Image (tube, rainbow over all chains, first blue to last red; front, side, top):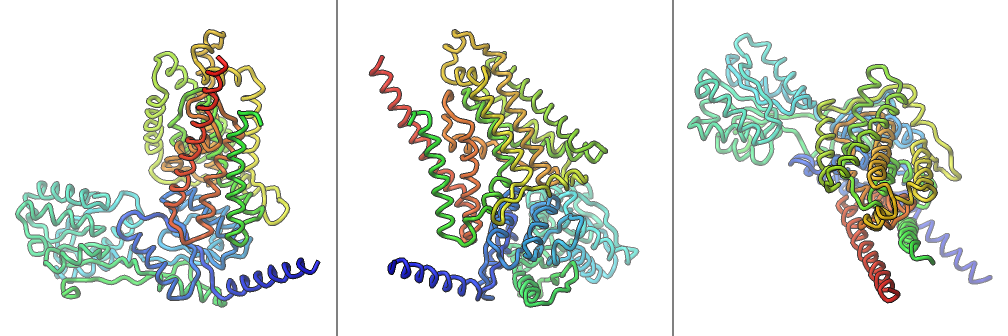
Length: 308
Length: 322
């Protein structure tokens, strides 16, 4: 009898210690798409590093690009009763039910990066992400200034139908539309890849007889622009001098090109965005409930002058 | 214990051991909520894997089920977008699955082709067709879909049994009945055990082969329907790689890849084991998802090794008797 009391005392004590340690830290579940490309692993790592700095107990789940893995992970977070869930969605559709389950469990959901298509927008608190349209506008504004508003442009588009490709194009076009002597003369998809960018630029070079009369190349991401730079060099042209080169992402390889003068400007798509995301989540948990449905992460243009 | 029940006993043991391990390691793990989620989230894989169980017991293989799941989803989304009722679209897609499977089985028998190669062709064909139908994920917006995914039976505790889990359990029950209480079921085992003897004993090889793959088509299409309802969308990339997850579920469930031996109910636990490993990794939150694959791979390896040993002792017994 006596030993049983002892035992229950230990169990109770251990339980209290456990409960106390769990109560002190905020637990956040983060469901990431996967680790494709350069940007996303950097984003994942930043989220983990920033969580450590903020003292957040981060549950990180990588969906390996699969919707079903992501749904499983979010349900596991709900079952685990985390304090908040951050989702970088694999696809825009299919979120209604699981978000309802999160809401029923009183767990707030935040979106990072991509959007979701749900009937009831109150199922998530807010989306925290960069503004692709603004990135396009910044690229356009830089080019307008650099070319004094007179420029024939070739454009390397991202994957057809993808949100960054659509929005960067729209943003860029909205700015150059303000300048009657700026226009896009050629535009094709390079699928966001270096190889794709190289092929498209090779075709442009052929079609325009060595880029005659072309003043700038705008690429929806750096990888395609890196391919374009290669293609131009192979054709004996001087990217960055004969033709202004502007793109989006600001990846390390582009920094090297900017230094070498082969590229002129790159709009940064930040991967270190944990410092923009966590404060929103933490403030929400502390009681600030009213957030716009989209919290925009600022963008920045980098030129050769920045990297010297 | 009868020899045929040893593998399934091993499977259930591993499942329970994993569940208890999760419970010992993480708070809130030992709950009906986790169990219900496990059944719901893995329902479509398990449904498809039930069909694969029949195919593998018969000594065949089916690599096209992941693509079938994707294809069923995008076409269903398209049909519902054109005003079809989701149930009518589901029925049409299941009929397509049966027909498709039947044709595959017929070709395998008529042309005497390796099932591996023809179903691999099916994998490419159906996945390619997904992209012909749609490049993006298409939402399925219909009040029936909302009602289906919202409907659930509460379990004691905080958990619930969702409609997809219930469909899965019914599909499993049907599979068990077909496997163990019908002439067709007996023929499947006979075919997988020894094709020549089966033919000599009067098993209609062609008809059975056609029916096996038609049944496989039925289950993979049903899996696709459940996936589409579960995500309320059709996505051309949905289900990629699921054929391998299904085969893993079947093997973890104690079915021999050499054919002739296996239990349909084992596949349920096989599928739940992979799901459980993923859940444990999500609960932990610091392990990378690569661990899920590593652990499933190790388990598969152990199971196959154990099965080899079992077959070895059985063959040795037979020889000593013979």
